[in-house]
Length: 146
Image (cartoon, rainbow, N blue to C red; front, side):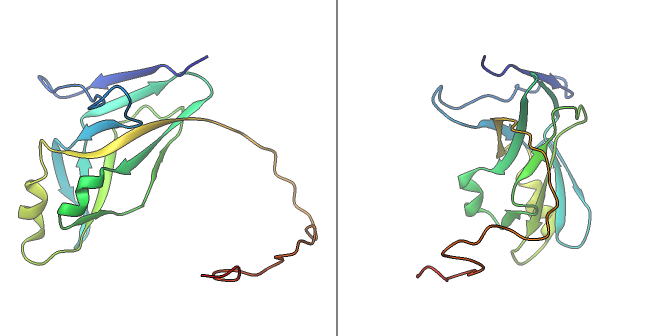
């Protein structure tokens, strides 16, 4: 069974989010309002709420073109739990110079992020006193080469 996504648009006359091409993985989200939360963090209102079919959740990631701006997504990937029904906001951090709010306002009515629907895989959690040994063991960053 494939996922079904319901989208509620909260801004009169807005275009509903959609894929630019039928083969795109992500559904483009646009910015319709912006609120400065801290010195360099801005929450962009996408104007939508969603409801997914059972067994799915969504991720919000920045569009690749965001690299052309002075913003990066503040939380890297946003996870939208299947039971969340509120509006979708996307947090971005201003990393440029100059007037941050004016620069943020330039992103209004622009596609800023993508919504990606994912299959939800749940698991049980077991707390143990030790884990199985492996060849790599506890070797961390760079332990297997460059």
